[in-house]
Amino acid sequence: MRDKKIVIIGAGPGGLTAAMILARRGFKVTVFEKENTVGGRNAPLRLGGYTFDVGPTFLMMKEVLEEVFEEAGADAGAYLEFRRLEPMYRLQFADRRLEPTTDRERMREEIERVFPGRGSSLDRYLIREKDRFDRLYPCLKIPYSSLCALFSRNLFKAIPHLSLNRKLFSLLKTYFVEDELALAFTFQAKYLGMSPWECPGLFAILCYIEHAFGVYHTMGGLFENSRAMAEVARANGAEIILGTPVRGILLDKRRARGVELESGGSVEADDVVINADFGHAMETFFPPGFLRKYSPAKLQRRRFSCSTFMLYLGLDRLYDLPHHAIFFARNYRRNVDEVFRTKTLSRDISFYVRNASATDSSLAPAGHSAVYVLVPVPNLRSGIDWEREREPFRELVIDMMEQRAGMKNLRGAIREEKVITPADWDKDYNVYIGSVFNLGHNLRNMIYLRPHNRFEECAGCYLVGGGTHPGSGLPTIFESGRISANMISEKYGVAYPRTRERI
Image (cartoon, rainbow, N blue to C red; front, side, top):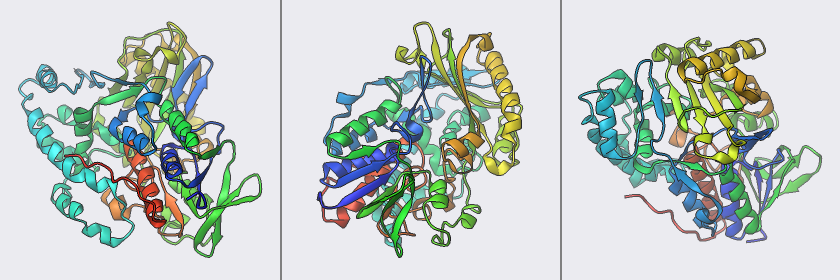
């Protein structure tokens, strides 16, 4: 198959998954990455002696990562060291704190400690959501590039379990009566950039996945996953060319036949895989008037996720915080409405602190820590002037960390710092309107209605990443790369192993 040339735009997790699998199967693979390092939003950020992950920090469903390494002929354990986190994270409400664990008995006791009389709710949730997960998971591993896929046996079996008439928070209240306890099992909607009051109920499986399979840290940082994937891809014969932005798709009528480079010149290919941010790719890679379904005007009518305000802080001391900690706004419902509905900046914020130095001493000098802070905020459709709001909002976040996270004298501990606003995501990272979780995951943006892995607007073109099926989040992005690799393999009659089904 070395006569079949595949060009991949972007060396993010989805593009690297496709690259290492396709190269293993004998395709001639070339990856063009605009940055000087692999990873995309899963790349490292280095400030002085401190190292951070730019984007994803939760590694869920580690088994998916191990499976795609196996399909590329490699053992993930030979390249990466994983550390399971127990408890998985800390959830801090205004006046009480919960520390979820995958140990069912300990988790039941933890719920009883914080929410007396509610511990027995856990078993009902885990039993019911395991059934939902077992039925839905096979549906996420196949493409939906034709209407025929909607009539698959697995999807028909899953439809009664989609909870199409329920929102996530409403569904979780059927298990956990108290609002804060229900929220403890719905905050994962942030992985999708959605409000738990608007997120489809089927995503109740997200918290189940954490409890069933655990939450992991990759030692050295989650960007090590991408570094290792690039190493495997190169070992399999793929060429990864860094610092080389792509200007657009070479077209023959409505078919992709290669890419044009920003530096001039072009590279022909039999197929093209796009791993760039979906909205950015639609606005950038195709000539005016080419796109119909995803034209710039129609993109503006699509629902996109929220954005995030980020702080990356190199600190000259250690704080007594767990690896992951989520701090809920005192009035969480109002905060969520401000982010998703009224699109205004909250003064009562929710925020996430990742204190990876609690687990991994390699990320900062001895006695120091590399702290990552994420605050959900509206995307750029809000009209917020981030040039004006950047510094005041940064001060608010620091205040909240000192007051609510117990990080006393935080300002005096800062030795290195970087801020990323929604405007920075859009301008510097090519994230469409700063929507870091990509297209929304409402029912009109899922399964067949989400952009297809085999891109429906352009023959010979495939999509991977959070903007296509199955959606955002590292495990589903890995799956998108595997799905596209399998579709290209099928196109050329290359056999491949069918992925294992969970029982």
